[in-house]
Each structure stands twice: as structure tokens, then as C-alpha cells.
Length: 154
Length: 154
Image (cartoon, rainbow over all chains, first blue to last red; front, side):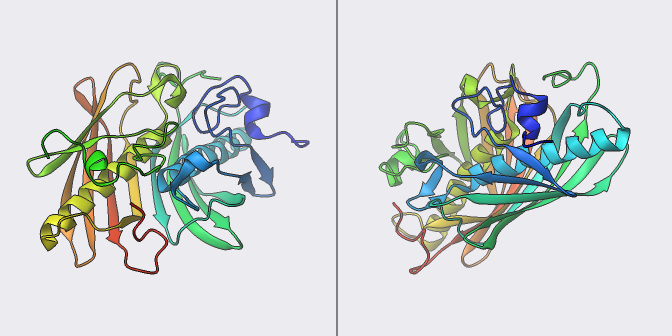
């Protein structure tokens, strides 16, 4: 990976709200591989808050959704021995907000694939801030084929 | 309600990313009461897409999170016979993306409280576009008291 995020390496021109490097109004997350985890460090802007000092729970969901989707795509790519990730979409994701997430510093997300079927992966992830887990997520992400609107989107 | 959204009526100066009327970079949803449902019509901007023509699943989660939270607050307010809604936060929410959501026109969300405990409500919601349900959500929203950072946030 040599320092590149998955997004910059495989989809540099995309404009997804959560993960598109080319979307200047998006979150532009940069997910990187660390062993069997995919890790993200991200700092919220003031307009990502729910109320002063704390991150909106929906924004936390955007981070989890896109970051876990990339963890799934990376895993499915390696499992298939492919040179590039498949086009994956979210089937479902569930977020638990365990305690308020401060918006004053960086957040760290860690995602890991916990189940794999032929065309899909189940991913679990945590979000940490100030040294403790604030939120968790579990989602299912599916590789789509020709005919789906998400096919060949990058 | 006389035409006012819940947000404009009860929290006009707030800046939440999803529902704060005063956040010019937020989604600024306007939830209104229709019988026993809370309804939202909202049109995405180009930067809310996942890929051309379709809405990002995380943005769909933001809509569900804030809209269902307001449905819970409205319900708990009426149940208590209060003059204003309690300060509610999201405990958890789960989103199912059943088929791609087009970004070319308005989306309609409908939310309904399905369970109530003393301090919390469980809400189920649907998102429709072009006449069919594209996504669903179920979430739990909790009224917080003094000492919680979300207390008296509006």
C-alpha cells in the first residue's frame, strides 16, 4: 500500500459523499490497511456536529458505512486474488452510539471482516475518540455485477 | 403545527448536521406531523451522491437518524403532555438499503413510533423514491436529563 489510502489508490476520481477523493464537500475519508484491519483517522469539521462539541450520529454512520465498505472490498479482492477491488454496495448497517463522540479531535475507526460469503462480507467496526470506544457498527457489503448501477463506478 | 416543521418550531437556532435549521452546510431536514406519522420530503444535492445518479447510503442514514429522532421526541412530548419535546439522543439505528435510491428527485421518509418505554422510543421508518421503498430503518432514541451533554441543546 506504501502509504496510499485505498480510496486514493483504487478510486481517486470518485465523488462519493463519504469516501470520494474528488468530492470537495464530502468527508473524503482515507482508509488504510494495517494487518487484518482497515483503519481510518478522521477529524470532523464544525458543521459535522450534532450540538456544540459532539459529532452527529448520522455522520458517524457515514464514516462507518464507507469505511466498512472499503474493508469489505479489500478483503474480497484479496480473497479472489484480484488486482483491484470489486464494486461493493451496502446491504445493511447498524450503528450503536455508546457514548457521545467529541468533535474536538481526531476519530479512529477500525474495521475487520468477520464473515465472508461468495459475493459479500460482514464487517464489524469501532470508533474511538479520546482513548475510548464511542460507537460500533456491523454491516453487510455485497459485490455487484454488470447491470447494477454501482458496477464500474470507479 | 400550522405548516411549521418540528425543527423550525422547536429548535430553529440549532446547527445539527442533519436537522439544524441554522447549519448552512447541513441537510436541514424539515419533519412534519401527519396523523400518527412524521413525514419528510427532501431532495439531495449532487455532493450527496455515492456515484452518479444515486444517493450515498450514509446520507440516507443521516436522514433516518435525525428524522426518527424527531419522531421520537414528538411522541415522548405528547405522551408526557409537555409543551416542548425532550432532548433525545440516538442509542442505535439500523439501516437496510433494499435497492439503489435515485438522486434525481425528492425522497419521502415516513417514521412511526412502534414501542415506548419511560425515557425512550423505538421508531421504524421507510424511505421512498419514484414510488417505491428503497430503504428502511429501525432505531432507538432516548430522552436525556441534566448532566448529559445533549441536555438543553436547543
